[in-house]
Amino acid sequence: MTPIVVYNSTKTSLSEDMEPTPIQAMSHGPTIPGLPSFKSLEEKRQWQLEHMAGAFRIFARHGYTEGMSGHISVRDPVETDAFWMNPLGVHFGMLKASDMILVQLNGVIVRGCRNRPVNAAGFRIHAAIHKARPDVHAICHTHSTFGRAWSTFARPLEMINQDVCNFYNAQRVYAEYGGLAFGEEEGRRIAQALGPAGKGLTLMNHGLLTVGNTVDEAAYLFRLMEKSCEAQLLTEAAAANGLQKQIIKDEEAAYNFKMASEAENLYCEFQPEYEYELFLTGGAFRA
Image (cartoon, rainbow, N blue to C red):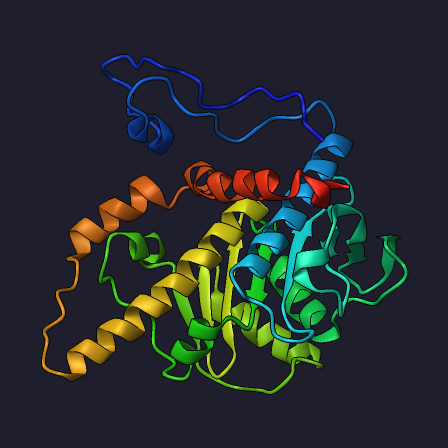
């Protein structure tokens, strides 16, 4: 589906008293398209499902699969007390928009694919976060390799490069391990650890979780957090052999966060991957 859209960041010139948006600041020449607008909420719903399926395909391509573990949720724009999740036991690389399942915050399945259940532990985690954070519209969690490795240290990522500054003062650590989240209390503790402003959460002995205003934002942040864990682990190995780390200063890290870790900019950061997935598959996942 290609929605009829009106882009929010199409201005190509600014008056002297106007501060550029992050997208405008990044674009030398015409501003690249930003977040789309839709003619109806139903149109937005279908667009969200297509991008959700695209995120799963991208995660599969990068190897973020581990058996039946891992899930993405997206809050429904029509039934706002419900969110879409992936069916349990379907490989990320096979998922389509029509495979997703709409679940209310109270656990009732109301729409979508009825052939399979959702992940019970995943539902409790996502429901708790969606309840606690009305600003969060999408959540990503998988058992990716470098995220799991870094999670064993129960430490936040350091600001060792420009890209990880997208998490400056916006990452949290859940420094407990309560086993599989089959109880509601574990989901609530994870939501509390994320807090009111967290964008990324390291779950000790478990993996990573990211949130966003769109599934594109949450998925981009997950990819970034996973790669940042890899970079951190490589850096730690080098530092163990005597090399000294240089950490970005707070002032510069805060500036990078302000200019880059903004909803529209993070949405745009994900579009090259999404468009590449469209190119590779001919858009088959949008069905």
